[in-house]
Amino acid sequence: MNIPFLIVCIYILLLFIISFFARRRSAGNASNYILAGRQLTTPLITVSIVGLAVGGASTIGVAEQAYKVGLSAGWYTTAWGLGAITMGMLVAQKYRQLNITTIPELLGRFYDKKGMIAGISCQILIQLVVMSLQYLAGGSILCALMPEIFTLTTGMLTSAVVFISVTMTGGMWSASLSNLLNVSLKYIGIILATIVSVTHAGGLKNIETQLPATVPYLSFFDGVGITGIITWILVLVTVNLSLQSIIQISLGAKDVQTARRGFVIGGLMMLPIGFVSALLGIIAKTMFPDVSPAMALPMTIMSLNPVLAGITLAALWAADVSTACSLLLSSATLFSQDIYKKFVNPNVSDKTFLVVTKASVLILGLLTLILAMTISGIITTLMIGLSLTASFSVIVLFTLFAPSLCRRNAAFYTIMASLAVLILWQTIPSVRIFPHVIYLEWIACVGTFLLTYLFDSKVISASECA
View (cartoon, rainbow, N blue to C red):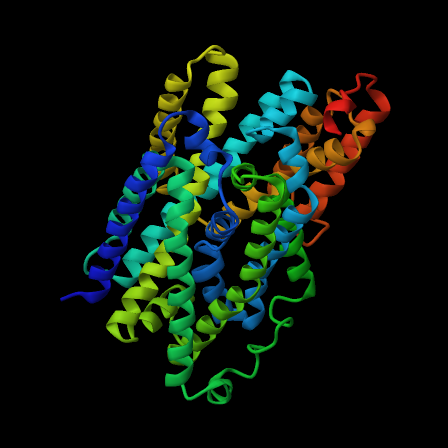
């Protein structure tokens, strides 16, 4: 009997049971489906943001990087946590006061039509790119850990069926309630696997003696370096301030304090888990020093007790499920709310709007599956997608905290500047004067926004921002 496979099957069954339970709570109107009727409690907000953030990159990706550079790889997940805390403390209340559903809705309220259209396009692009990586990561995990059952393609197809079905069935309620299972499973699985692996390896002292002296494996800073850590923090604080899937979680809370508490608690929960994943990657280095980082972690996991190996496998896959469901729902919301309702059928009934949103989940889910099958270079693709959020963060911060500096055309020009910077960075190496594109994005976006203030006389309605 293949115990790891059996455990994964039980996990999938539990997901579907939770989804059908969530379906009853999401029935009735589109607000229940998209925002859980704005009734999410602090625990559900907490697991939702942790579920979105602690995905494949924050677990298996961190472990793989730690195999090469050491414990400092764990700062990636810590940076996510700092971003969530910043979001909760700085802008969660402001977003709730605006009573919006999407970021483009904010752009449409304060800026011109072309700025809103540019915002819709970029937000959907960012989320589809990041979401497609979850299919790829999910397929890779199943294939690497159970090659006798899954190929990369069948692993991606299995992931797609689960991602799309769970999201379509219960919407935000489904994503939130399933994250109670997902987050519990991923934390228990990763922590137990690390503890057992450390014990089998003879303790940290023994692990240290087996590591190459040329790499600072047990340093919290030296492997990635201070510059790399600061870059991660800047990127992920930027993402947390303006990515639709994150904002949608905060808007689903029953009140401002619930949203704030959920994000702060979730951020605090994220701070240590990256270093636990990194330690697992370091242990893989001692056990399998001469294989590729991508193979070392699966080999380490499958060397554990079969039950623990199955739990850890399900935990790593749960990380992708939780991230993908949130991204898929928010992408569908962007289409139904900001494209269909705004431009195609402004007088749509609530029932039809709900059907359109669910259909969008299916169509966008299949579209991202196709995209995932053509992607190469996961980290590069991820950074390309996330760096575009700089323009939205600049727009949001000025709109919420300095409306007197905002002009009607500022959103459009700032988004265009962000796209231009990204294209130049990818095509002209001499432009790369900073360690990461995010620095140039912030400079260009802030500069463009302020230049628009100087040369554009069309002001926004500052009273709505108060």
